[in-house]
Figure (cartoon, one colour):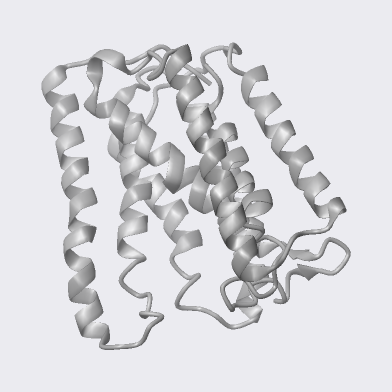
Length: 272
């Protein structure tokens, strides 16, 4: 099985790079997301935007949903979801969707990145995919000690993701852009180090993976409330509209937790 995190990062670059061109378009949907303090003229892109894209899609678009769904399906956690035919169908649908999005965006924006930018993106995507399959059979030795309680893993995920994602919308001053870049780097290093270490200790299992995903999901829930509506209107009314959909992920986490508790599943084999 390939590494989900690396494949998720590749997906993030595919979607926001070659497909919709947002990483390089300085007027994407009428907004200039590039020319901030972290803009690099030599690359024609900023540092902050790729970090935001990687965090959003790697963590919340791909890894968190997979972890939660696998918690709900005790009997198929370590089995592939699709066979060869299913993979072929999904791949065809994905490519068709990517082409459709590209054509739609190009028709509206009339923008396409330079050959050098596209080449760099494709090389980064290929490297991530190759790395994902290169580490799929690698097993690291156990480490001494016992993994922390699942709630501690969840709390760590909540704190790390909140430290990065929480201030992005309320703090829009230029001075914070490089601070956010630094927080992203520190959070990524800490998150990867913690998971790699704890998952190799005695006691690490499904409950820890669920708690980590739930902690990240709660960050995505709470950060939606400080965001002001782009279309204007009443902030109070907007908060009321967000209350119900924000409660559904929490409900889903509760269902996942009950499913795992009632199943009395044993921890899976360590997979790095």
